[in-house]
Length: 205
Image (cartoon, rainbow, N blue to C red):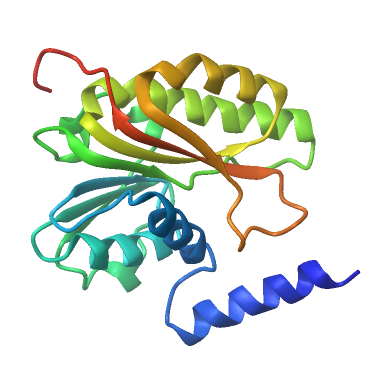
């Protein structure tokens, strides 16, 4: 009966012990280990990075030869400013239409998003808000993600989300769904992992 609380305590305590800002680190770690999404030297954008555990993980994975840009509507997390290969911006995803809007001058190797809407507790409303974020990210992919680049994005499960994602499968060589082990058992979220982006705009951003 209390299994979900044990899971929560385990990953919460593990993150605290290992100096990560949130338990969500282990979701990205599992995804990366399973699918090989991030590699040294990659240019990565993290959309909705707060509180920043994905930034911590990605900063190490891309090494000094790579870089990470993170955006979030919340104030900058000063616990991350010491990371030399990371640039953080306080802004909304809905104000972003091209890489130049976030200080980038070209396509990214990886687009990440653990972004979630402000939840209301009303499932249908929360699902619709989550899907709006997902649709926005897919909308900007043509000018953000390199050909053969990778995508990781969080989705609140719903029939509308499933239908939308099926309509986007042709954009990647492989599109997978995963509910990481560290996800709370009561959560309706899952992650979409797109490997090898197939379509891109002919013009440089």
